[in-house]
Image (cartoon, rainbow, N blue to C red; front, side, top):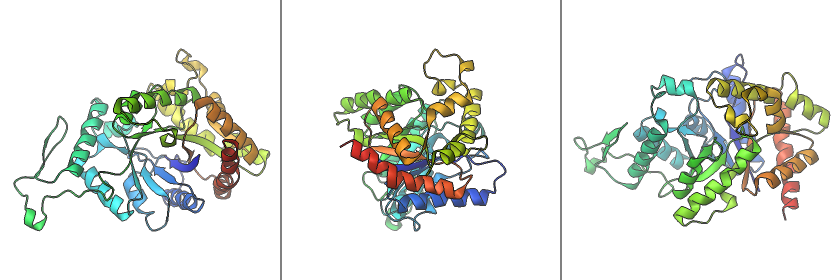
Length: 361
């Protein structure tokens, strides 16, 4: 099992934005130092708590502050930008990172973002599909472009001057394109199947109950089978909320206490999912009544915390429950206590992961 990092950071509303962004960047730099293989950042434009507004801009700030970790968008919310803009910016970042880039994409899940961009009532899945198809067409072809879509039309004909390079949209360094991943946030996700059929790989979100995470693997196998590609567990990434401390008392207080950043994280998501009619994500069975889902039950099921030995044992049990996967993505949280936040990542990399991997041999 490899270790990665995934954050759609949820910070206190009154926290200085400069401090939040500084600590978010520090987490990626620490992950790089500890040998994490991948790191993903989410983006939202209309959320005071989830305050990375551009994952591409955020990752660009880490180019010279990281050495080996691959940096990924988690995700670019395709309906909210013009496909030509996405194609050009991703291509540039891939070059700036010398190919150390992973392209994470999605239709976007924050309803206030959809509302502000005018696509709340649109078919955002259709917009997502049209956008990524246009991006891939741009990367695979030279101008003049003449793409006619339902949502966007892209053309450069009148002012295409080949001899001086005018009218070209740049292509990424990695050819034919950077690796593409999709974040699966629904049980039995059909999107995982369609992504796998196109050669893309899944990330299972850290706010899904384990049985829903487990449901993603058969859907991935289905898509791979359709495409004639091997369904390799090494390509499955699973995000998880984890806190590791040197002693049980510290771990329990930081992960479950009234001021816990983990509790705050899930209180925010609980409110958003309840308001958006997506409570199913937090249910253990589909027929479960909404009023049976509480913040306490969510945190109990979705947060793994404790000493290195305890966390390793629980991760092994989690893997036994959902099946084998290739990369564990440590889900970033606000550093309510900077030293404890950093120490958790260190212990996971240096104490927990070796034990997990030794048990799997």
